[in-house]
Image (cartoon, rainbow, N blue to C red; front, side, top):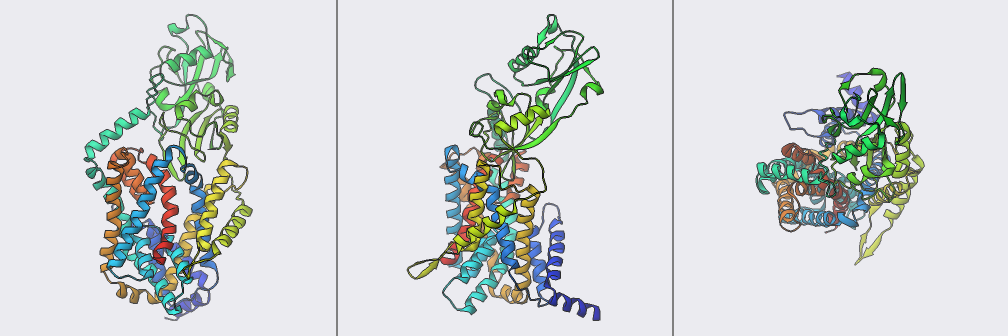
Length: 568
């Protein structure tokens, strides 16, 4: 008992220990799964914080706010390029859909909150949990602090937010994945039909209208290098490198002649007019789906370790050049500026999208190029910025960006006597959006490696949630008794109705392809778990093409909707 007493007293005097225990155990529980069920990290950290909070541990200082501002800035930074790029061109249709979905989500949750007579704190918690937008816990709390009500009401409403969130979040996550992954295809015509439509869509996206390029490209396949002995009748007369590559293009595949062995000499990156004759050996490179075809017209494949042993570079490149923003993968392959390089993958925001022939590259996309170092470097310079792995982060960019955004958000306007502001948290989100977009246009500053963004995003949010849980711990049980189990029913309604309406609106009004429709609904609701369930159900990555734009819009608008839920 003395050890327990000492441990509790130590945590009360050193709240950082309690926070790290909450984080560590919460992340551990969040990893556990039973079949497909998992609480998820945020909910696990919150519940662990509530448990630790029963020990009545005071947490003082600005730690909670600092962590939350880092999280919001990282969110904005990640989706900024897609957010602004989507406001023009072909993305506008998905932008409009996402805006409508956010309004439906807000209206449905507001209606449910009115039906159950919830106060602003309960309504904000319902919105945050049912729509799985954890950041609302923070922005709603900031908004309540600025309201013209008594301190007792402020405290009561703020404390009930995480309680309502915890009750509604589980179905918000699992229910969304089940509705969109299982029921969604049934609503749109049946799983078998939607799968077939998705396969047909992939074929159409791979069809080049100019030369019937089949280009059946799988984004998850690596680039390959293969060696052949030149023996075929095609080489009865000497052939130049250009003639060989042009011949393969006419066959619907873009491959490159990387190396040639002539006798004991090996020529690396032979010139386009270099002549190849029978008896030589050549190395071809290209995406695996291009290069696995029968190359008997060249000769037998050989295993020559010396010929195939050479350095190949694979680096991520941010698309920043206006010449490549908006071009299709097929046009990318045909460009003189990309000779010798192959796209291994495309990441938009935090989502991998399929490398289909008609997939359009957007500013801010991270494309992984594979090829010889000199050719990759030259192509990267034309495309944008080689985002080579580094451990250095531009903290000047982060610190001043958050500070300026928070200062702008702190400005308060009074409308009809009601104080209105973005709050410091809303300002940090907007700052992240703008600065993330600026970096996509001028990628020479504001470097944040992906692991750093992950830390800001995940640890920032969960550190904030841990403090919320510990602080709310002493009143959590009484709060749960206050909201009661009817809140679970309210959460199911608030989660389900917008999803079903979104599917119908996407199909009947926007005429989205079923796979794109499912991705758009998941993105508008920022539910990554549902995207995974959809892709597993359809056995395709095509839904991600509807997810990225709508996620960027939804992730921003839903957080701001948290402010609106409090004020209305």
